[in-house]
Image (cartoon, rainbow, N blue to C red; front, side, top):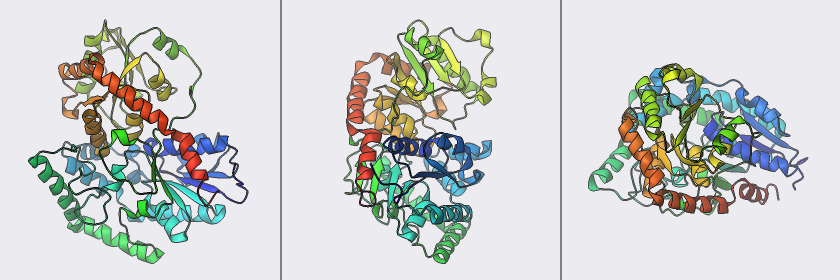
Length: 454
């Protein structure tokens, strides 16, 4: 137990589920150990969750739409989920690389740091302004990485620091470890284009603005690997067995998926429904995925084709349910919910036999933690990287987004992962690796052993 009266710990995260939830699980683990001086800084929509714990909420104000994927309109969504891997990567950078808006959050966090005077900061890897502030103030920090380790160790451009071998698949390409000659060329071309992007008039202007802001604040110039090298500890919520071979730096620890104590919700009618059905396919495509009417109709037909052998539980947001066929025409083995009391409780249920996911870091790792074979319909960026790793490691198959509207293809993928024993066996092997890694308990132990808190 630490003496938090003199050693405050400040957690900092973007408000999106992918970055917030694993960090929140870690903070809760520390709170259960008696950490009375824990602070959590993020945007206002997370206030109620944090204030329901012993932690203290430090507000970073309202969500800035340009910095939050949840608030992107349909046009931006189409750009960041386009078929071109590089086009999607470029669109994400264009919409999120906003030094002027990040400066607003930097100033808000600066005031919080002046008040809290943290002995240690624990920062999600996408909150760049928080990392910059920790470095500028000389505050020890822990980097929170909700994805495979190689994602933060591999550069996007041909130059600069790298922790991976030459020719390693570039993040956001969805390329495999073993590449054909054409794929090797595509991999290098992606990096060249990623560098050239900043020579375009629009992006070079933004880069100059970023350099000017950093100079004014006395901050080091942005370099992607600095966030890893300068961290006291890098906590990666994955395991080596799901990633491609890579030598990790001495400060990086893989602790597996961040799973809170279960069950998260009281046993209710949904738990009884799962208990009564021996094989359930769970479809949970995250909070951002937007399906078309044709894609939704296709997944309904997939459920119909599985009727008699499997039931389907589908988490479909209320905003998309108007695209469903008439309710009286839905197959009897399909259950649709707009909200789940706990996705983790669903994945933990022994009758859930396969998981259809968008491949985001959290859902991908959580599915593997519970030993579920996967069908991954990648949404964007690192989702494609997770999908190819899952396929190469034998735990799942990839559903290319453009084929979602083909019910025969989707049903074929699901039938394979449900009936070919190798998928379940490999998923169970990776579940054992995930659970042995220690998760939140191991992460908390590592954090508490740091000089700033020991």
